Amino acid sequence: MHSRGWKSVYRYPDRSCFLGCTTIDMKDALVQLMKWASGLVQVGLSKYSPLTYGVSRMPLPQALCYGFFAFSHFISVACFLYGTVSPLCFFYGIDLVQVTSPWFAVFAGAYASSAEVKSSGGTVRTMWNEQRIWIIRAVTACLFGCVDVLMKYAGVAKANFRLTNKVVDQEKLDKYQKGKFDFQGAKMFMVPLTLLVLINLGCFVGGAKGLVARGNVAEMFGQGMLSMYVLLLSFPILQGLVPRLGK
Image (cartoon, rainbow, N blue to C red; front, side, top):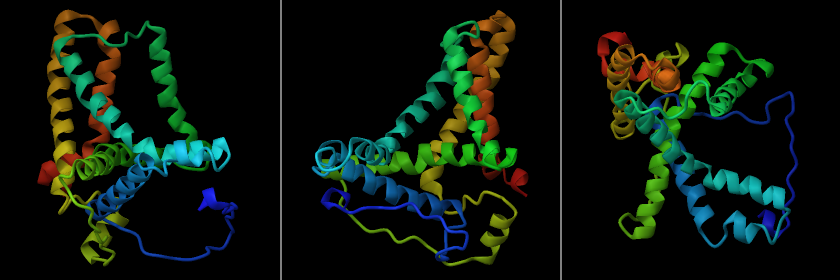
């Protein structure tokens, strides 16, 4: 539409323009995100890609913005590697980034930038939950969306239309209002999540034991903190795996 001359304006009035229903459980939310990811990646890889078709028909900054939305879902591959390679190296005592390395400051600065939520009026809990949701959707909905597109291009899967459930269930609504994660029915999405949690849990325990034995804190500190950080973010998933913790 923008390639054909459509002009957009940003408008955010004080009064809501419209009200609608949204998903309140993890399964429906991830299914909806997967549909969006699959559709955007398809556009990005088609002849109407914003980086090829769009650049010649709209300003470069606008084309790059559309390109970000189309290709940003491939970050799921990087997140999955971060969640597996780093803890495995920590377990085997292979250092990737040392605390004394200048690159450690880059990683620390990137993490500190997440505190921008506070500057926009958000709370620490909001920041923490946003990071949880971002990681969860990256290694589930975005990953499955990219795989879905690749399978369609390979001819393994056919294009289909998935409806998102918007029916309000009282039990799910109660959990949503209490801020609890509801993973019921999300078995497909739980596979990569559970795999990452178990890998990080086992590698953190084994790596911490090896860290005490070897005493190479400066070399392994960053990877140990990353594994512990992933485990803290994954606490709702641990609650889902251990029913007693979820009560």
